[in-house]
Length: 171
Image 1 (cartoon, rainbow, N blue to C red):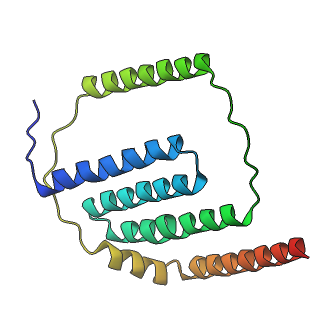
Image 2: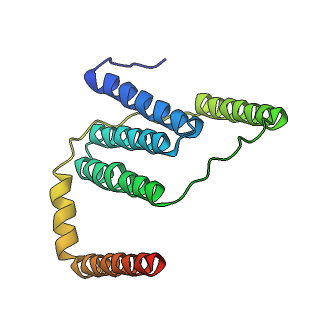
């Protein structure tokens, strides 16, 4: 039915998929927030690998730089700077867990049926992408230079405002 060639790209796809799925499952099952953030960073890194497989190097770089780096570090700092009280665990709710499992299995069944019954068009011949990073850079710094600079000013003002608000709370 399917003509699949086992290449390095095929293996990399499944490795990145496994990293993303394991990270997502760990994210929702771990209890310590720092461990959750590390699991989420693994998902972001796996997604960046997927972007590399799609020849979107710029998007992969931004994914690693912004999400896996900055957002994860920001969350860790936010956790470290807030006070947390160790609380009692919520009691187990077997009815909710059973309904959630039934819902997840039902969703899996519907998606599996939809994927299996879909007629896919013939694949088009592969065209190697040109240097998309150069194209994004040229477009960003020629056609969209004013919005780019306005976003940088907006982010700087937001950063200064956050510092001012944090200083007022400390006093």
